[in-house]
Every structure is written in structure tokens, then in C-alpha cells.
Length: 308
Length: 283
Image 1 (cartoon, rainbow over the protein chains, first blue to last red):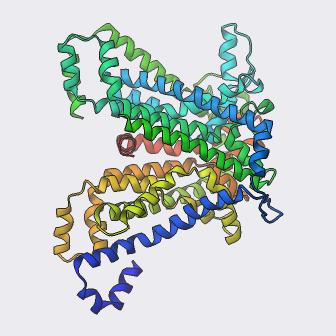
Image 2 (cartoon, rainbow over the protein chains, first blue to last red):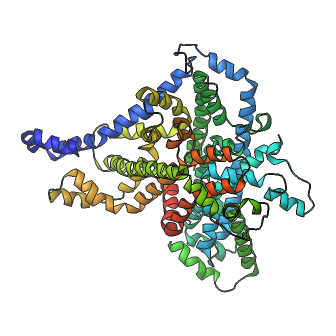
Image 3 (cartoon, rainbow over the protein chains, first blue to last red):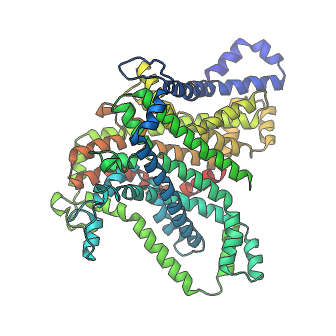
């Protein structure tokens, strides 16, 4: 607001002689001034700095000096990195198809349901509104052994032996993934519902008149027309699973990353390298690797959208 | 919406048993979805002796956990911190993202396209990559451990700007021209004429920004070091570690962190669902 009064006071004569177009240009840059400053200082400058830091040996105590690709070399030779890389991709490869399959099936049938539609939709949507850090504790409690753990309690009532869940190197990762999938379903269902509603009814009517079965309608009309929604959700949830942190950090606070690092994702490794070992330069190199992975996924998305 | 209204006409003639089975399965699935929330709430209403009794309806419900936890002052502080942070960041996004989105959608000037592409390109950059430079910046400027330190990275977002630009493009130019002829200045035209025309988009943006900041964990964990400045998720995490196995206390803390958004949802369900659809389709 202050820029406006200032401009009017100072340039009264000049301002009134300007054309409407010229005034518009000044207004536009006036509106953009603070945002441009923000994007330069808080987005662009830090982006370049992250690349720069990744080729230095910066730690909290020691000023940064250039070390070339040393950090990247170290990362590729670090067995922990490959373990973390594997975990991160497991979150992605398990999480994305499982959550999309469940949410599509739910949305597909929910779309046809009229009775208590918005109530049922709300049941599925509520977990999306929860705080991941809080819900990780609820799930951590579920996974406890009997008598406190709900899941093991249910299993034992069916005579199934106790499961170690978070204490086991093979079960810990799926156990951490479950709350992440659970919390994301509601969002995906809503987006699928919106996509399904956008398909014109006339297409379905024509298909029914032609005597296509429900399965054929699904394969030949619904799924192809849902492709943009599907691509959006695949990318959105892939990025979410690649950046998983809150759940992993909270579900195992005494040993973040699980037994033998079996649940540790890349973002947790970055956090620990930067804020437990204070090797900021090394951590910066890890963030650049994360950026590269996300960039590849975004480019694949653009490609898929163009093929449409 | 039109499409949804005409489906029942096709489906009405007979209620097939398949429909009833589908409905029942959907309903059971929905109940399973909220089970973790039900257990969380029910355990928060139990005392230490009842925790091992896994019935969902507590035998002797008590608010003692809430009284104790809220009485100790830390949670109240964290609630206030989270509210301040989420509200200010939301207001900032609603103001700046729509101002920039409007400017890029409705003004013709050289450099417009470059500014748009530059802002859009920041969507490619994950927060995690910026966190270390932000941390460095915050420590140099003395922003560590302050509200501003928690808030500054999110004051504007490319996502919000893009969303608002899409919606402002749908506002007819005639409206704005008419206001110009009436002698209104450009700021007033934006604020008084254009903004009221995009309220659904504004509410979608506000909901997303508020929820994102209310549940944010990674950056607040890094930037805050003293317990007085923790946001609710960070505070809850440190509280839960210190409670070790007192699950009824941890569940009470988790309920306090979760209930505000759930209660808001109950009142604004229609707007929130519509907002998510809008943002998902246009964003």
C-alpha cells in the first residue's frame, strides 16, 4: 500500500501524463516487486547455493572450501547410501501402485453409491487431514507386542503367532509404509471421483446402447479418459513417497531408520548427515541427488502428458 | 455436477444385489479407515490402568489426560505457535499468490512470460534441497528459533500462484474495464472486484496452505531448538519420546494435534472436498 501513496504523491504530474498502457506496466511491476524479491532470495539463490555447497566440505565448525566431486564420490562408495536408495525406491514402488489401486477401486464404486455417499466419502477422507508425525505414534502403538499392541492382539485372537513388525528388518519397511498409504488414500479418492465425474454421461449411455459390458466400459471408456487424472496422481504420490520422512522419523525415534537402517529413506539420511553429523557439504550432495531423481520423474510426467 | 445428477436416472430402475454388496464393502472399508483415529481418541479417554483393555468404548472415560497435558502449559504453547504460524502463512499466501497470479493473468507487459516461467520452475525444486541454504541464511540473520524462521520459506508458493492464475484467467476483462472507467485504481480493482469472483479458489488455497503448515514437521524440526517455539507436531514428537511407554498420554497428545483439523473438517466438509477437487484438477 505504501508504494501506491508514494507514487501518487511524487509523480502526480508525470503519472497523469502517462497512457493507460504505461500505467498498467508500472502497476504490474509494483505488484510483482515484493514477490520477485522473495523468489530470488528464498528460492533461486538457495538453489544455486545448494549446488555450490554440494562441492564443498562445509561443516558447522569449519568454513566451506571447494572439494570438487569428492562428496558425490563418497556417496557412491557409501554402502549406507545404496541401502537408503533401495529403501526409498521400495517406498515408491510399493506405495504408489498399492495406494492408487485401492483408491481407484474405492472411488469407482463410491461414484455409483448415492446412499450416505458423503458420509462414506468423509470416512475415507478423514485420515488425509491428520498430522503424519502424530499418526506415526498411533501406528507405532498398534505394532507393539501383546498385550498393548492392537494388531498383535487381533492376530493372537485368531491363533496367529506374534509378529515383530517394527523390530524386524523385513517387516519394518511395509509397517512404516502402511500409515503413509493410509493417510494418502482420501486425497487420491477425491481426485479420482472428480476425474470420474468429468467423463460425460453420454459416453456411457452410448456404450450401454451398444451393449458393452461393465468391464468393457471400464477398459474402453473410463480408464482411457481418466489418464490425465491417473498421470497426475502417479506423479503426485511418487514424489510424496520419495520424500517420506515424518512417519519414518517418528515411528522409531530411539533408532530412526529402523533395525539395520531397514526403513531409512533418503530424506532421513539427509537430515542425519546435516543435523547429527553436521556434514553439511555431504548432506547437500545428497539433496542434489534427491533433486535429480525428482526431476527425472517430472520429465517423465511431461512426456506422458504430451503423448495424450 | 450435471453428470452426477443424471447417473441415478440410469441406475434407478432396479436395485441390484451387487450394489448392496458394494455399498457394504465400502462402508466396512470406511470404518477400517477411521479405526486408528477411534483407537487414538478412545485411549486418550482412558487412565493408565485401562490402557491394556483394548475395547473402543472406554469403560470409565475420563478427561484426566487432557487436563494434565493441557495444564502443564507446553501443549497450549505449541497449539498457539502452530496456530500463529499456520494463520500468518495462509494469509500471506492468499494475499501474495493471488496478487501475482492476477498480475500474470490480467496485465500485458514485457517480461510477463519470463516471470511466470521463473516462478513455475521453482516447483521442480524439492524443499529438502533448499533446507540447508535456508538454515545457513537463518543462522546468519539470527532467524533460528523464531516464528519468522519457521514461516519465511513458505510465505509464497509457486503452486498457489499457478492455481490463482488459472482462476483469474476465467474472470472476464469487461468487469475490470468497467471498474477502470469508473476511476478505480488497479489495487482496488484487484482487491474489490477480482478477488470476490474467485472465492472458491481462494478457499482451496487457504485450506491447502493451512493444512500443510499445521502438519509440517521437517522444517520446524530443523529451525526450532527451544521447546517454547516448537510447533505442535515437533512438540508432540519430543513429548512422546519423553513419555516412553505411557501410551494414554501419547494418544492424548496425538489427539490434541489432530482434533483441530478434524473438527474444522466437520464444519467445512463441502468446501474442503470441493477445494481438493479444484486444486487437483487445475493445479
